[in-house]
Amino acid sequence: MDLSIIIVNYNTRELTLEAIQSIYKSMIDYQYEIILVDNHSSDDSVVQFRKHYPDITLIENNENLGFSKANNQGIKVSKGRYVLLLNSDTIVEKDTLQIMLDYMEQHPHVGASGCKVLLPDGSLDQACRRGFPTPSTSFYYMTGLAKLFPKHEKFNRYHYGHLDIDIAHEVDCLVGAFMMVRQEVIEQIGLLDEDFFMYGEDIDWCYRIKEGGWHLSYYPETTITHYKGASSRKKPMKIIYEFHRAMYLFHKKHYQKAYSFFINQFVYIGISLKFCLSVVENQIKVLR
Image 1 (cartoon, rainbow, N blue to C red):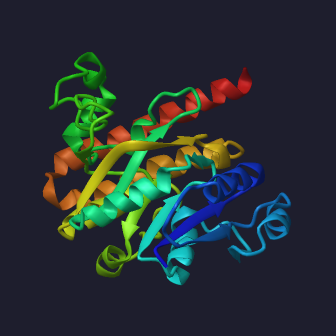
Image 2: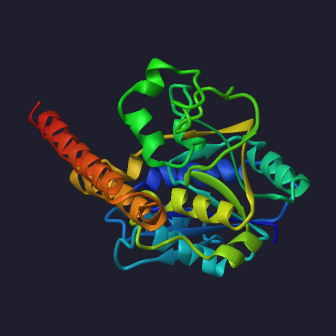
Image 3: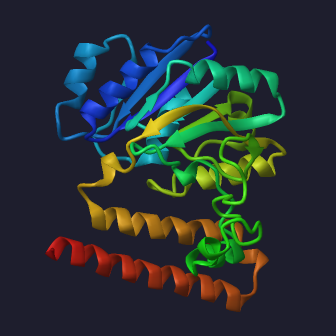
């Protein structure tokens, strides 16, 4: 088996069915398997999956375990030389899997890769190529300096705004919506960190992959479409909380020991303030 495609579903039945259909339309010379993990959806997702795609491997959970744990369940039973984390709200092009597998085969030093990820309006999902959220990188992004100086490398490390989106380049982080990883890399560095519920686990994994001596590549010779946030729209407060908790967890795990007490406190206060602002903004939207 060449490729194991892991999809986590949580109340995104129609989108997941479309994602799977796009995979089956692929023009691909490699052998692949689809492993679908359902996180206790409240719709009839499981019934429909069994009806339309009885041959895929389906793992049915009795509760919502989150993105990390569910993907880890799929990875544990995967048989492919490569593992692809693929969001349920994505559509792959006919050539996507072939091109990305060819790229990985031709670049043995690359531990993980991602393609160009587009939003439905055709714009780039900037999360598909990121720098690590160091205190300085996060500061430049949060204060708007990155937007003010869009082509300045120092200020645009977070989203690589200074680099051409149509040219392949090495990155710090890929996005969990589409991340192709060598099985041998997973065996070396371990599974996704299950302390992260649904945000930050991809950044943490990328950090550990680079720590392990591997390269991560953004390869824009093919694209996918990402209908972003489809499984998280029904519980906005939960999403806001998990997003900011992931920021805290990542900094504490990877950066706290490297920075002074004052910088760490500045980071944590910044995360807290951003969380409060996000809660207020969300409540205003609800009242409207």
